[in-house]
Image (cartoon, rainbow, N blue to C red; front, side, top):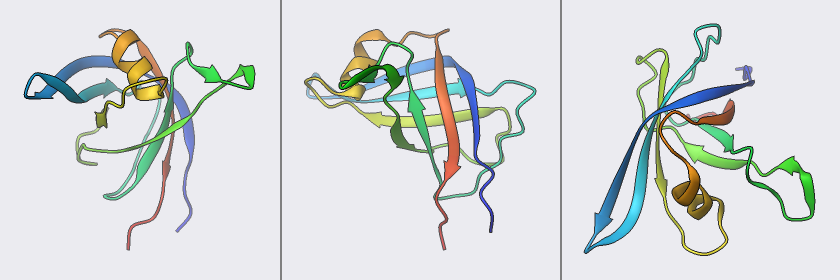
Amino acid sequence: MTLNIQEFKAKVEKIESYSDNGELVYKSLVLTIPEDVDFNYTAGQFVMISMDSYKLWNDAEKLKWNAMSLASSHFNKGKLELCIRINKGKTFTNHLNENLKEGDELNIKGPYGMFK
């Protein structure tokens, strides 16, 4: 099986926060894939995501990419859902939590991985 890795920007359609005892645990993101992107994946695959505002600590010109599991069905064409555990401190997920808003765009690369 050959992976068809694509790179594109996806629009954040919806953000939902989930807490446990008042403390934020994770966020669910629904992303809209551009109409000109034919993004196909199977169960068990993941994507790499980045935000234009989050760069490598040792190279401020390069994006910091982060692996995220796909939570959506591959039958739901045109949409991706990610469930992201929010880690405190100077982490990508905390930056995403504090800065990402509905209507923003995320950089997406993938799909990666083969589940057998």
